[in-house]
Image (cartoon, rainbow, N blue to C red):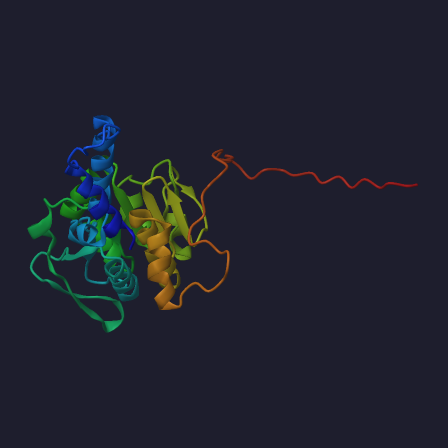
Amino acid sequence: MATRPLATALTLSKTPRAPSSSSGSHHSPPALVRRLQTLARALASSSPQAMASAPAPAPKKVLVPIANGTEPMEAVITIDVLRRSGADVAVASVEPASATVAAAWGVKLAADALLADIADAEFDLISLPGGMPGASNFRDCKLLENVVRKHVEKGKLCAAICAAPAVALGTWGLLNGLKATCHPSFMDKLPSEVHAVESRVQIDGKCVTSRGPGTAMEYSIVLVEQLYGKEKAEEVAGPMVMHPQHGVEFSTKELNSTSWNVGETPSVSIVSVGLFL
């Protein structure tokens, strides 16, 4: 780089040259010297050596709870993708005495800890996988409800997929007034206070919801985007050969803030008008 020779050259200006015997010699103005010294220090701090020694930002902390009956794809894909992004993901069992849970489809999942052991920790994101009866076990776990409720009250990012939006977050009242989606077979279980939509991944403020195992990859990439930004999401998705369609976004932003709701089935009249010339 050109910065090292320049920094070295400017640093030399700290030592004034001896006055010349010529009567026409002049010293550099003090203000100019100070500016040059400041520039030299700035260039030195931006050198590769200085930048390499700068501390890396702390990873985002994520909680993924699991339970008996959790959908393994939704849990494992979320954990895997978030860890690829650099997030510090804690997998916690909500089962009272076992760190290993009997997930759906005969799959066993081993947690890092019991939820009770890390309930007081702070997280940047809590993501609930779905599956049944996994989502019901989440709903009935008062400790998990308290952890998620406090997390949401602090304005932090919360997410759920498949049955979990309706069965857990919806039952706890944490989706009221928000647009949310869930597994098609649970759409009618979303409370009436929720604006139900059929998006594959739905973002509303600090809440992200999704539909099922087939949307788990998109859901996980959106969580990376919410935590770290679009550039990191693309960096993670690229090596997984996930998103080859040029111009297609991982998430969409709602531009129309108006909610269109009616209390009954609307009547629509279509009038056909013929134009004769």
